[in-house]
Image (cartoon, rainbow, N blue to C red; front, side):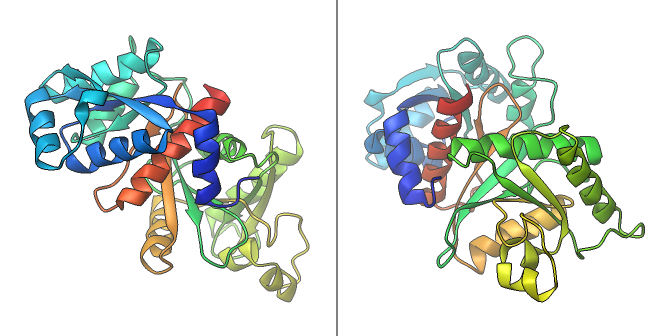
Length: 302
């Protein structure tokens, strides 16, 4: 089990390097991230986008882009499609969003001809390294699925389990997080939680252990679970926290970053290859860790 981002970087060096195809690479933050990934020995990159702007940004910031292949395509949609095509044809292992709207890059990912669609839901998986916590933990879905139904939540769990297994967590414990620990028909998320646990017990969700509903405290704190009389193998030991909806996931994600100063990474999964999609608010460190997470996922499953 990989327990810290220090270990993530060490293992990514061993299992890499992998090649990133960057869509619309004329972005300083992204160029810095791929340059750092190259320096760390975890990834190479193909830069797709406006070559003149890429060169200008690199020159102004002392980034050596001669080490990367550059494909000059100025149109954002065309550049995104080309970046995805490089992955679908095996010339790169993952795609990374540059200076382009998320909707455009995801449209390319789902393109019927050269895209990376699998028929399953795409979902965002965030990984956190929190000071004083004895392991990494995953939060999903904080960015993609607004109000997932039961079927989608099942797929979100399956996507997150893949990422956990890429982190060498062989049978991750999944806590379906709600506002209370008992199923209540007035609170649909708790009913979904109960059903997801049953689906896991019946073999419909494999490769993990699912428990719920849990409040956040008894999902991650054994002491809190014992205090409330909760005796479940997931209680206090959760590796994956499944949020009830995008609001809950997003608030949890950002509270970890801005209140707890947690180190973080995130990728989109559910396609045929990882999609590294970072926010402008993410630190350079978070972008590098996200690439490393993509490297581990690509090495394990793609």
